[in-house]
Image 1 (cartoon, rainbow, N blue to C red):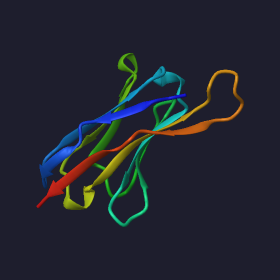
Image 2: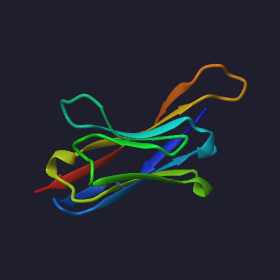
Image 3: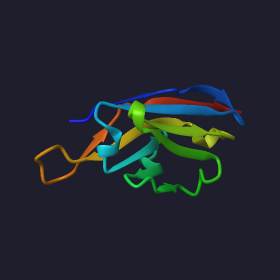
Length: 121
């Protein structure tokens, strides 16, 4: 299994920055896909940024140019750098991993516990 532990959330003002971290319990290069999702109150969980095993990245239109997903293989950690934060970015942010355990045929989805990001005006 994979354990994902997020950190770095908090309360900031609009225009400021935050960096979220997601520490994985397995080698991050063995994970097929990693991503950041978010869920605002009363809304569905949505994909924010995705990174494939080949390090291709994809972003939601609402965060393009402001957020950057990256990883540190040596630390088995995924990051989300969030700049120019807006009040609409307020949500619980979740780390996601798609991973196939050794000797298994299928991939499984893993989620972190979430970290709250609150952006005030």
